[in-house]
Image 1 (tube, helix red, strand yellow):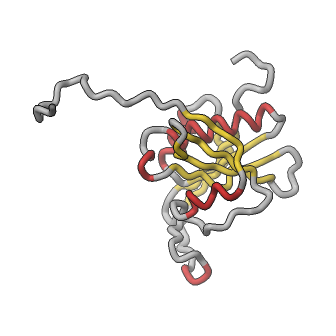
Image 2: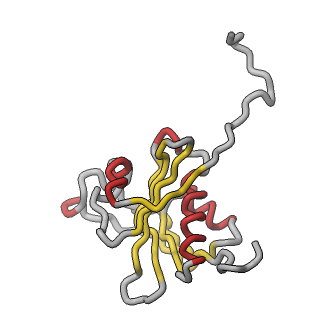
Length: 169
């Protein structure tokens, strides 16, 4: 029974054991409303679903970079609201990037999300490939009604440089 007292050191975050599966485009429906871009997803996207104890918690998708053979980029990264803030999104992005690297692809992510920027900057597996400060306001007339632009926020691109297939970890 709860006694309304907090003892230092008693609160522990549960172990988070994620499973990441390649999935079909249809899995995006569960996550689309939680992403700031439109709900549509390109049919050629490679989709990945992360589950924790069998429950879906995160989704990401990658696309080929047009005109650059052997390169892919992240196009959607979403962690459901109940699971945000505990590092799941960053872990999923890193795992999917490593899968692509093992297949011989170069992969990148461009983001204005502070947590993902921080993760990539701290990690030895990501290299900053571009930084842009967006100072212009995007006209809202042509955008999805829920779109939140990145005006005034830093937009950073990173390339994954983790170990290549067969290399010692």
